[in-house]
Amino acid sequence: MSLIYCLEDDEAIRSLILYTLEAAGFESRGFGESGSFWEAVKRETPRLILLDIMLPGEDGVQVLARLRGRPETADIPVVMTTARGTEFDKVSALDKGADDYLVKPFGMMEMVSRIRAVLRRAGAGQRGERLTAGALALSPREHTVTVDGARVALTRKEYELLYTLMANVGQVFDRDTLLRLIWDADYTGETRTVDVHIRSLRAKLGPAADCIETVRGVGYRLEDKR
Image 1 (cartoon, rainbow, N blue to C red):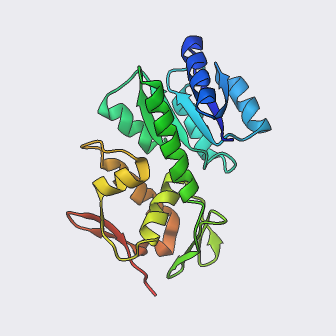
Image 2: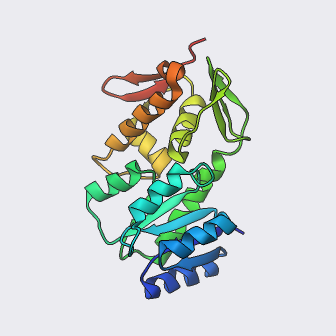
Image 3: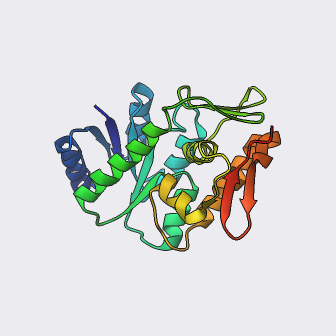
């Protein structure tokens, strides 16, 4: 059973979310502030985190940054929840490493559907055979990426983006397609998110960065440079 943590300071909303998750077959635990949440993370790692942006003390953006900055929590899928609904807020949350974004008030069934979609994507990135392209190697079974044998630390989105490109060597992906595949999103005008993650990915891949090619006016593809 998948364990889900919900960090939400509104007790009524938190209770409803936990009730819905349990009814949908998930194990869930709720937290009203970040202190008790971090203590729980130390004891047991969840499969997914529902994270409200507007929190007392340490806010959701700060919590997300800490999660992504720690090797033991960097790959945990995170779905942000907030009353904010502008395009800028959505892009900002995705750019900072969120896996999806729910705007309050959201339907409970929509929430469950989004969670299942994120968990499916997270699981898909952990299966399959080892992929290689020049000095670059990706092992889905071990969830590792190496360049010339040296381990490269990637965020979950960077890993999923690289996996998609390496599993389809030579295929050109436009930005909208990558948004749908990696972020399960179809937000018009938010393709900047893809460019941000490509730049970050290239920086981390170092000498193997040139495997990821920009197709002007279209998107990106990965080529085997051997």
